[in-house]
Length: 405
Image: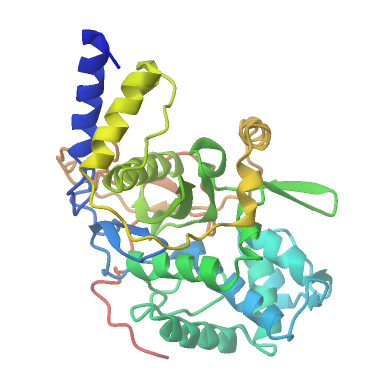
């Protein structure tokens, strides 16, 4: 087949752009200078690491903790100890958890399925505590010990849990690698229930709560999995995306805002898919979107030719693919334009100022400048909030020994 010169030039340019990232071992957009940052992208089928930056350094997981809470609930259902309709009683301790929350009242009950939906959409801390207490025989502390034991059994050797929600605790830490592993195990161990993580919204007692994970509607092929935020962690995310039969799982810790974290995750997943020769998805305004179909095809084929062949084998496929349909993505995207209703507490912070970190990163340029005045400290998941400056912390996981209480 004959090609005109402009098309050939476009194809060659795209092939070079894609091929440049094939051998990358670290993110091209690493967040240099931040103690809170870590990232990893793995192949969900093989577990091979495609991209990594500080993947084994301890970080605060925040609401990513709820992934393990849900894992434990799924396991209890599989073993017959829990059903979707099991009533979960709300204790005074669970009802008193700070935001993000459903506003549960002590003494009321909700079903186990409602609790799970509240965790994966609203990231409700009160529902997480109630579910943890139920599974822990009335004690959230006992449940946290069970979570840690399960983490060890799954191979999450650097993770320690202290509660079911991810609310701040200096000893509750994990790593980017461990959280990516947990995402893989949720897919592998509970393929029939994994679709809960792609739930676009959840209606509870007449009120609709929308999923905080923007990638479900903004990044093609994403069908999970969980966002998280507390002051000391920054904005965290574990995402699972499948394209052309290849599924990647990415973890990002330490974003300065939910939007910035999401952009960084999309850039890392783009880089990961390029490494395995999967065609990039055109986004409006990009050079790829403006390229002709034949030029895009040539670029992708050239990149695939330069990629070592993968072994044949089954891929992890979630039943939640319908959640990424154009209609559902449009509905979820439209809903997110509404302001989020949440409770915010504020506290006065001391003023410290450090020079911005100079970095070549153009997608996630994060600084250590800290602002004076009042700082948002909404605990839980606030990925729909605006940028949040880091508050002075009592210490970082890297500086504090992780000892059992």
